[in-house]
Length: 101
Image 1 (tube, rainbow, N blue to C red):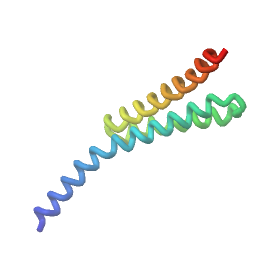
Image 2 (cartoon, one colour):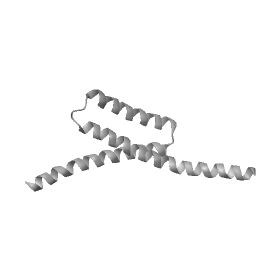
Image 3 (cartoon, rainbow, N blue to C red):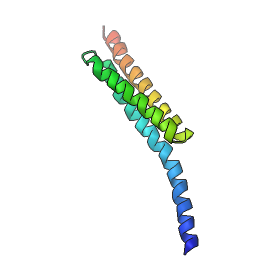
């Protein structure tokens, strides 16, 4: 019975090691989207922008200190991908407006 429990613990550790970076990627995408959507709105107060920026920076620092390199890297990759997606999405309506004129 002890062999089964040790084997199960190792299996759960491997599955957790694979899922944690993917969850961090999704979290990074959502945080990046939230940050870029807030910064695009000109009516937002500057205090909110600073609070969101410091929150994202704090999340990245905590992940860097308390997680492995794969988790931190995928968080940064997700946040960067969300920022690039927002920029590309913002540029496309401008092209459609120019084509209509």
